[in-house]
Length: 207
Picture 1 (cartoon, rainbow, N blue to C red):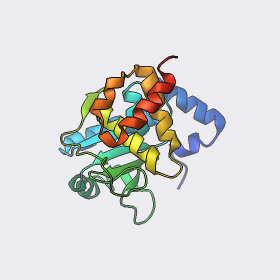
Picture 2: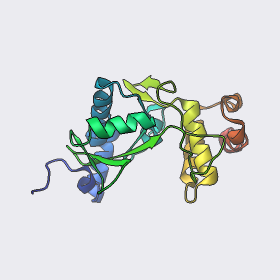
Picture 3: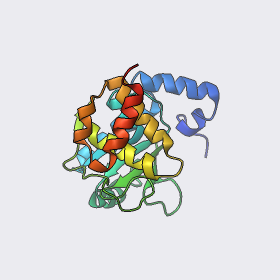
Picture 4: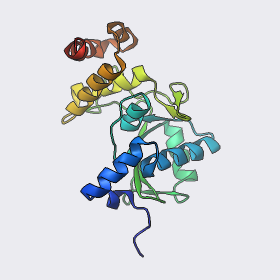
C-alpha cells in the first residue's frame, strides 16, 4: 500500500513539514483542524456527547500552541459507541487492541480519548477528575470544548501529580497571562488546586 496523500505524522517528522503544518494550524486550517471538525461532525451526527481537552482546547480558549494530537473527552458510554459506530468508519485503533488511542484515517492524525471520572496526572483518586461532557462544555468555534475553569483545574491537577507533566503548569501560567485571569478566578476552581493557580498567577501578574 502506498503512502497516503495526506499523512500528518509523516509531514511533521521533518522540520519544514512541521513548520508548514504549524502555520496552517494557527490559521485554522491544516490536518489537525480538519480532523477536529470531522470528529465533531461525526460525533454530533450520532448524538455522542464530547468535549475537546488538552492543547486543542487551549487554542480555543486563546492560547495558541501547536499540538500533534487531539485530546477528546467522552463518557464511558460514549467511548463504547465510538468503538461500535466509528471505528472502521473513518477511524482506526492506533495499535492492535487500543481502546482509547486512534487515528483519523484520512490524514493519520492521532486522537486520544479520556473518559469521564478518570483522574488527571498520576491517575490516582483526587478531588479533580475529568468531567461529564454531557453537561460540562462550551461551544467555541463551533466545537464543544471543556470550559475554561475545568481545563485549568485539569492542567493544574495533572502538573501537580503527574511525573513529567510540568508543561501542564506552564500551560496554565501562559493561559493566565494571555487572558489576564484575575485572582478571583481561583474561586471557580476546586480548592485542591487554588493555591497553585494563585502562585502561578503571581509570577505573571506584574508583567
